[in-house]
Length: 66
Ligand code: FES
Image (cartoon, rainbow, N blue to C red; front, side, top):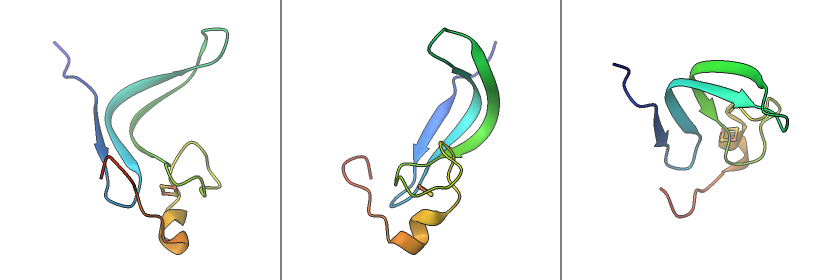
């Protein structure tokens, strides 16, 4: 039995995903599978959709979730 994938919203930073996720394109094809990664939510990462820590230099402040 597998454990659910979890998403931790970091205060003023990324969303840390713990678990395995399939990235699926518009045609429904799995284009990438990643395990334990951080998603950008500030919009400044040069490695979208992943966090490259650019949120720090841009002073990102999260609203709502944390
Ligand atoms: S949240 Fe880290 S670069 Fe955007």
